[in-house]
Image (tube, rainbow, N blue to C red; front, side, top):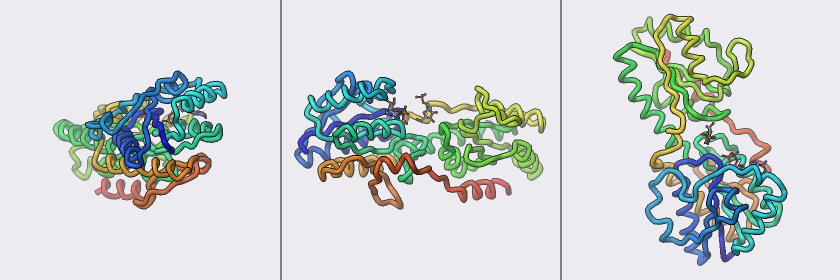
Length: 332
Ligand code: ADP
Ligand code: F6P
């Protein structure tokens, strides 16, 4: 293996740069060249391929985002798009590709693997919704961002004795809400994986008030969606609907904060930099060993490779013990 390419695809995540650095420098260590594909699969189709070397990845380990930029590409989902992408990779001399991204990016990675080039995936998404790895790059940083915000909201919530409903990202997954809720001491956590009744939420808030709590924080994952009464999906922020319901039912004053893309930026945490460095290095070693069609992840703090096909058959699980614990601790 003389030349390895790397691409970042899908939603960006803090720590992607640390992974790029690890890939380029591990390739250098094994006397291989590194290429960077700009703008995800879009750039691969449009031949936006640049040379990278150990110096071009200097001073990026601490930066959020991705120096290679990211994009989404509908064209890449077509056989023609994939054929062009493969052709460009081959003409650039790439013999292996590392795809840093989420589930959609790995589906694309498998197409390229099946078309004849070795590909290894690295899970990177703040949502932490990828199976066969305990954590994906960016999740830890996003959780830390959320708890920083919760700390600030606590100050004003205490002063005004209000209920604050905070909406966090997670697409269809509640990992960010669960971890940030436990670490931030939220009174209630609403996630798509667990059915809940807003009437029960209101009762919990009322009993917290009776216990003398100065404020309450309700953490809502964006994916809880749907009409809470009819189950029909409606296109409005979950947090606003929760806040309106609580206000009408309890008479408490409510305020809403939707964190949005703040959660995708910022300097990666130490955990994310370490995870990115370990996964980046392992991905290159796999390609050096001639192994493609895998995602490398971390399971029980060990780096493990799982065939890409298996990733699509498995469901990411969420530790419901965390959910139980967060609510026990908040109920006193
Ligand atoms: P993520 O990787 O974060 O889940 P997306 O779902 O947006 O992000 O996927 C990123 C890109 O991966 C898409 O823009 C598309 O080019 C490619 N992709 C997604 N799904 C498929 C698929 N089923 N087949 C081939 N390529 C796909
Ligand atoms: O990166 C994951 C994620 O942040 C989801 O939680 C969110 O729904 C989605 O990406 C939004 O991404 P974009 O605004 O880039 O489409």
